[in-house]
Length: 572
Image 1: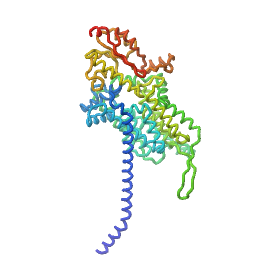
Image 2 (image 1 turned 135 degrees about the vertical axis):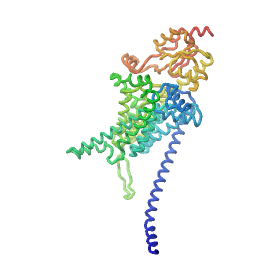
Image 3 (image 1 turned 90 degrees about the vertical axis):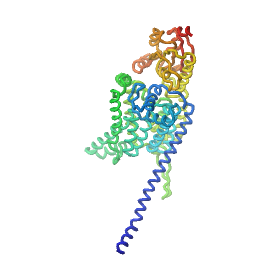
Image 4 (image 1 turned 30 degrees about the vertical axis):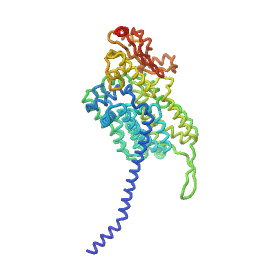
C-alpha cells in the first residue's frame, strides 16, 4: 500500500510541470484573447466617439430620400407590429437585419431621429473597426490607420454613416468577413458573410467571388499536378493563389446562401413575390438588362471606384508610385547585433487577387443590375481600392503621409463643395441642404396653407403625409406627379381643380456649368438608360400651372418653391 502511494505521488509530481505548462499556455491564450477584445472595444469606442462628434450637427435632421421612402417605414413596421415584411410601403425584399437593429434601438431609447442616427453611427464605427482589422491583417498598422482615416472622411462613406440605409452596414460586415478569410478562420467568415447578406442581399457577391477564386485555384493546382512542367507552374502561381493547407473550404464560402435563401423563401410566402414588388423588380432588374446600357453603366462604376470625389488623386498618386522602387528599411538583429536592409513589403499577391475577385464581381453585377447607378452600392469595394493604393504609397513613396494627408483634405473639401457634374445628393453634405430646404418649405405650408391639397412629387409626397418623418405635424392631402418636367407640368395644368398649391423642388443637382453640357448624345443616353430629366424652374412651372410663387428658396445649387394656383389665391 505504501509502495502504491509512493508511485502515485511520484507520478503526480512528474506530471505536475507539464500540467502547469498547459495551464500556463491556456492562461496566456486567454489573456491574449482578453487583451485583443479590450483593444478592439477601445478602438470601437474611439471610432464611435469621433463619428458622433463629426456628425453632431446632423443627428437631428429629418429623414432623407430612401430613408423616408423605404428603410425607416420598414423598420417602423417592425418596431410597431413585429412584421419582418413592411406593410406601410411596398416591400423591396431587402433582408431585415439593419431594420431589426433600428427597431431594437427604438425599443430601448424611443422613436426619434437622434436615436436612429446614433444607432447607425454605432454600425458605422463597427464597420470602420472591421476595415481597420482587415487592413492590419493584409498590410500593417500604419497602412491600417491611414486607410481607416481616409475611408472615414471619404464623402460617400461619411454621409452614409448616419443615414438609415443598409449599404454601409453590409460593407462593414463584409470587411469583418474578409479579415476572417485572410486570417483563415472559416466559420467566422461564414458568420460574417451571412450577417452581411442579411443586411443587404448583394453582399452575397463577396463570398461567391471568393468561392470562384478558390475553385479557380483548385483547378490550377490540379492542372499543375498533371503537367510535365509542374515545377514551373507552381512557381508561376505560388504567390498568386491562396496558400496551400488553409482551412477555408468551399462550403464555408457557400454557407451564407442558406440564411439568404431562407429569407427569400419567407418573403415569398408572405408576399407572393421573390425579389420585391413588381415595380421594384422592373426598375432595378428588368429595365436594366439592356446590352447597350451595360457599357455606359460600367464606365460610371469605374469612375465611382477610382475617380469619384477626389479618388482620382489617390489613384493617380498610386499609379505614379508604382514607377518608383520600394522604400528600404533597416532591421536590427539583436542576437548578432547587425543591421540588414530590406524593402518594404507589399500586400501579399494572393490577398490582392482575392480583393480583385470581389471587386470584379461587384463591378460586373452593379453594371448590369440597378436602376439608379448610386455610388453607395460600391461601398464594399471602394475601401479595398483605398487600402491597396495606400499600401502602395507606404511601400514606394518616401513622403507617403503627406500624400495621404493631401487626399484626406480633398475628401473633406468634397463634403462641402459640389463637383462640376451631376451626382446623387446623398454623396456629400448636399443632402443636408435638401433636408433644410424641405423642412423650411414644409413649415411654410403648414402655417400658410393648412389643410390644402398639395401637388408634389416623391419624396416630398412622403414628407407631407407621414408626420413621423419629421417635416410636418399633420399630413396633407396630395396629388402626386412623377417629376417637374415640362410634360408632367402640362398634364398637371389640365387638372388644376384637384389641388390648391404646388410644392416644387429640384429633384436632381444641376451644376451651374456642367461638364458635357453641350454634348447632346450624352444627354440622350442619360434620358434613355438612366432616367434623366430636366426640372423646369419655378417661374416656368408657375406659368404653366397658372399660379404665383408664394415661397422660394435656394441653397448651394438646389431650390424649392411653393406655388399657389389662382383659385387658391382667390379663395384666401
